[in-house]
Image 1 (cartoon, rainbow, N blue to C red):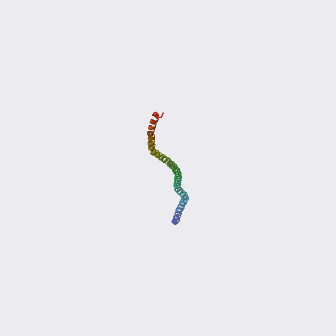
Image 2 (cartoon, one colour):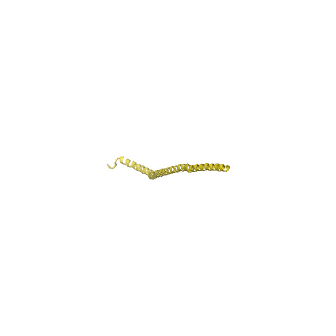
Image 3 (tube, rainbow, N blue to C red):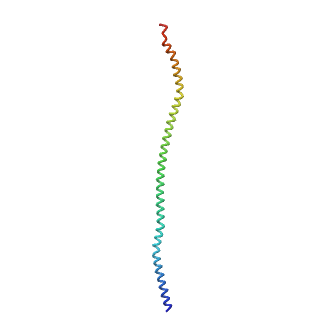
Length: 127
């Protein structure tokens, strides 16, 4: 009878072990789902961060493009202003070179006018 008792005890232990394994086996998909979710959540968060960074980089490129265009306009305007200033400078240089010549010419005219005025002021001897 002892054998029968041992067999019943072993059978009860086996049934208990089978029940435990069934419960564990039933919980395994749930735990796997949780583990999978635990892995997917950080991955999803990283993806969101990378997407946000990518969008920001696109916006920054657009801003940089607009800034480059604005700088191009400024440089073009500055080049035009430089050309105008160079033209005016050349004109002033030409005028400054001719001004002494004009002064000398006017001085000679004035010098020549003095004798003419004196001649005109002298009484006419022929009359």
